[in-house]
Image (tube, rainbow, N blue to C red; front, top):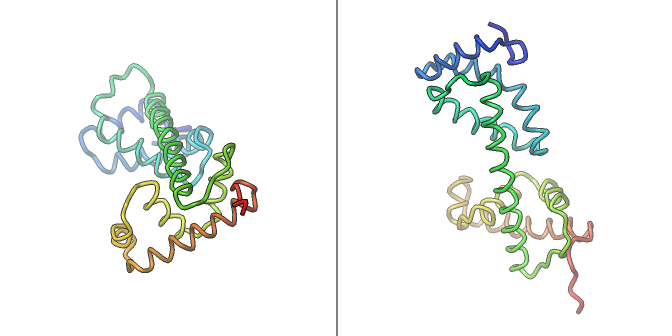
Length: 188
C-alpha cells in the first residue's frame, strides 16, 4: 500500500475504510496518514488559517471513524472524505465568525469600541500577535464563555494568573488594534 492519498488507489482506500468500519485502529492510522496531506492542502485553501488545520482534520477523521461503515461506495473514498471536510470547514467558518463577533462584543463591553468597519482579518492578526497563553485565556473566557475559575482549571494555573493574563491580553490587544487604527479612541 502506498503512503499518501495521491498515491493510494481507491481500492486500497476502500479496503482501509472497510477495516476502519470494523474498528481496526491500524487501518485508521494508515488511512489518516494517507489522507492527511491532501486534507491539509484542501483545508488550508478553504479556511486559510493554518493553526486550525489539524483540528479540522481531526474532526473530519472522527467522522470517518464513526461513519466509515455508512460509506455507500458511490464515489471514491477521497471524494467522500473531502465532502466531509467541506461540510466541516463551512461549519468551522461560521463558528469562527460567531466567535469573532462575541470577542468584539466583549471588547466593547470593556469600554473598548472596535471600529465599525474593523476587518476580521485584522482582528485575527491582532489575536495572533498575543502570546499563546494570552490568546488562549481570551478565547476560553470570551469565545467559549468559561469563567475565570474554569479557565484556571482548564489551563492548570492559579485563578490569579488567569486574571492577570486577561488583563495583559486585553491591554496588549488594545495596543495592537490601536496601532492598526481599529479602535475608536476616547474623545475626552
